[in-house]
Length: 419
Image (cartoon, rainbow, N blue to C red; front, side, top):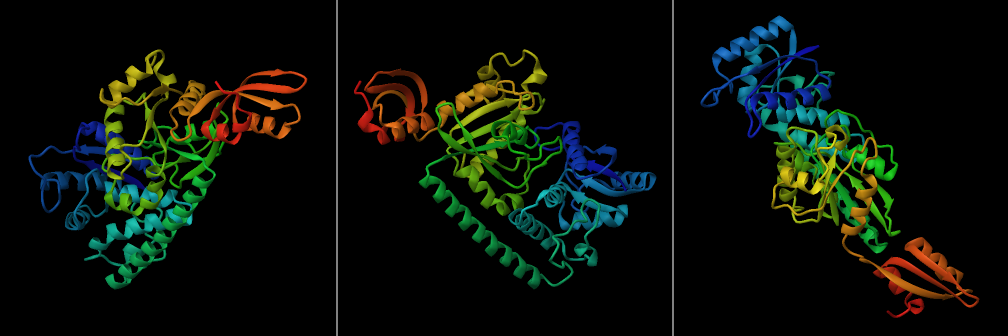
C-alpha cells in the first residue's frame, strides 16, 4: 500500500526539516512515502486544517498514487480528521496517531502494551463520533492498528471501564517498580538512566556499556520497553544502567501520561546520561526538547553527563567535547561532556571514567589498609570492592593502597591506617 503525506510547519523546524522527521517516523511505521506537500497560510482552516485548494490537490495526489494513507505533521481535531477523510477518500493520520502506531508495534512487554493501549484509547475516545466498526479492526497499515482487546465500536461506557481497568493495572506496575527501587536502594546500587532524542543511539550505547543485546537500529523508537543492567566502574563500584524510551518534539501528552511508570525510572535516577546525536543538524533543537521533557517529568535538576554520540562522523570536529556541548546545549549548562561513538567504541573509556567521577552518593577516595597476612577475607573484599593501586607484603602484614567508597572504608575501618 502506498502513502502520501501533508504537513504544516512546526515550531523551530523549517517545513522541509519537519517533513524529514515525519518521513523518518513514517518509514519506521513501515510506510513508503511517495509525495511531500507543504502549505503556508496565515491561519489554519477550522474544518480541514488546510485550505480547500490544498484539499483538492491532495485528493488528486491520492488518486494518482493510489495512496492508502495521508499523514499530517499536525494534530488534527476529530472534525478535521473526519472532513479530510471524506474529501480525500483515504485514511488520514496525524502526527500523534502515527507515533501511537509505532509505539503499538514496538511494545513487547505487558506493561508497555498496557501503556500504549491507554494512550490510544484516550486519543481515540473523542474521535468515536461518526466512526463505524473500522475503529476496532486490526490491520496492517498505519493508523489501523487498534488497541486490541477493546472493541471501539461499543459504547463510551465500556471504553471508560477499560481505561479505568488499565489505569489500575498500571498503578500496580508503578507500585511494583517502587518496590524494586526500594530493594535496589538496600543493596545499595545507584541508577543511571540513558535519556535523549529518539534515534540518538541510546540503545547502541547501552549495549556497548553493558554487553546487553537490546535491539538497536536506525528506526525511530526502535526500543520501547525499558531495560536495566548492571555495570562495573573503574573504582569497582557497581551501578544500574537503565535504557529508556526516546523523546521527540511534540511528544503526545497522552503518551507522557501513559508512560509515567516507565518515566519514573528517569526521575529516580541518580545520574542521567543525556545522549545527543552530535552529527545531526538539529542537535540543538533536539536537545532543548529533551530538556523540556525532563523538566516536565521532574528530572530537570538531576545530575547529567552530556554524551556527544556519533562523534566518528565528525572527524576532528569534536576535539573539545565541553565546547561542543556548550554550543549544542547552551552556555548555561555546566554538565561534564564526553564525545563518543557507541558503534566503534571511541571515547567509551573516557565516558566510564567520567561516570565514575560524577556518580553521586558514595564518594571514592584513596586509603591505606594494613591487614594481617591471615586476614584473607578482608583482602579479598578490598580487591572485589575497591581499585587497588599498590601493595606491599611483609612476613606479618599486607599493606594495600586502594581507591574505595565510603561504604568500603567503613566496612574495613579496623584495618585502615590513619593519615
